[in-house]
Amino acid sequence: MLSVASAQTVRIGNQGDALSMDPHSLNESLQLSVTGNVYEPLVGRDSKLQLTPALATGWKQTSPTVWRFELRKGVKFHDGTAFTADDVLFSFARAAGDGSDMKSYTNDIKEVRKQGDHVVEIETKSPFPILPDVISLVYIMSKQWAEANQATRPVDRRKGVENVASFKANGTGPYRLRERQPNVKTTFQRNGNYWGKIEGNVAEIEYTPIGNDATRVAALMSGQVDVIEPVPLQDVARINGSGKAKVMQGPELRTIFLGMDQKRDELVYSNVKGKNPFKDKRVRQAFYQAIDINSIQRVVMRGASTPTALMVAPGITGFDAAMNTRLPYDVEAAKKLLADAGYANGFEVGMNCPNDRYVNDSRICEAVAANLARVGVKVNLQAETKGTYFPKILRRDTSFYLLGWTPGTYDSHNALNALMRCVDDKGGGQFNLGSYCNPKVDELTNKIQSETDKAKRDGMIKEAFKIHADDVGHLPLHQQALAWGVASNVSLVQLADNFMPFRYMSVK
Image (cartoon, rainbow, N blue to C red; front, side):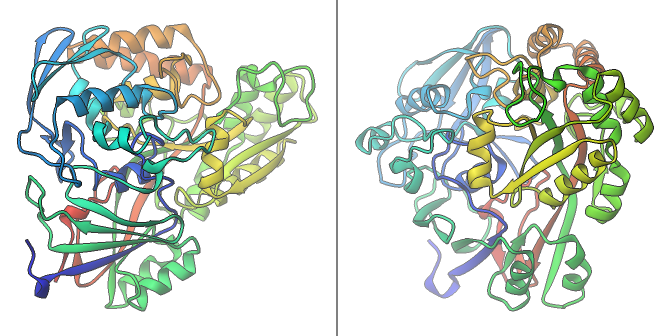
């Protein structure tokens, strides 16, 4: 236990809040980063993003489709109950069930079964050599606690129904949830009975959403908060020169992209009646070529982004730099494509965008809207807080939207499975919100999942990405750079997936 004399508090100011304390209700990095301090998976990540034992001490494949996990003994949930195999079976069923946003991590699991109190087997539908990577964001809840609190199902963000797990939490992690005030302040306390080592010295974390950029920077400079994320790009030099704080910057594994409704026969938010322009590849390509990505990089992102042609970033397994060449920005070519598709005078379309989730998200959308105006497309932009934005687009109540994606497995299969494969009812294509569909991509995604030969697997990833790019299935924009503002007396670890584990934080 920490002595009272050395007890430390770190105050974090973020542009948005975690929308729930339920670890299965939203597959969003910020939420999983926050709840990942309270809850733990079987297999976790260390400070270098390498796989590491968490609630499982070891794992091995006993057959091509069966993995055996030895569970950690002597672990207690925050309420004092013992962690056992029953909690694992319950949590995987919950993550795969109604209302869960984590189905893309469980859709290829056939069965999770108990082999004693501290051993489980996970059987997959086909050989799945990267299963330990895939389940590193499936957090384990207490079956007993969830049943006692009527929280056996996750909170469905699409319907907005809340339960006890939205506001309270009972995990096994290094920090406990002490108090939750949504959109105001959430307080976490160091878990004195944690089974593992907590590398930092922080006893308490106060997490406060501060949406306004200037207010967030002022709070850091005045000492009201110790860490801010993200730092507005125009303030980096000022913070670094202040002597009070520094900006930690680094590449992020997240790709920002635009999606389009390619399923409905008539767009919900458009003046085009009786047909859907986005079903025509020429229209999708016209949108792509109308976007001046270099101007967005220079003006909106102040250089802190890397334009991309791919849906995954460098650092993700399967990324191929040779394929990463964007279609040229060409206003005249875009106009011709629209005219050839029958839209010589353009058309109107609604666009959905968050204003507090990614770096300069609403400004990116404004720039895209201005670009599209040059080719005759009138974009009716609706930018809003992610609290209302995510439920809307996850219901697929959108025609044209902006999203960011970091593969939780650090592998291209994740982006193919979640974003690019045809949508099914098991979690495949769960975040393919425009319902792009090419059966060849699905076929390759299934093969990539089972292939153990690296060269063959990389070749299949390349082929799937080429089909998707040729179809103009989505409009990739860029990878944003991380920028965290950190007070001079605080040390922490910045991870390329933008997770912020409290266990590595220390106050000097």
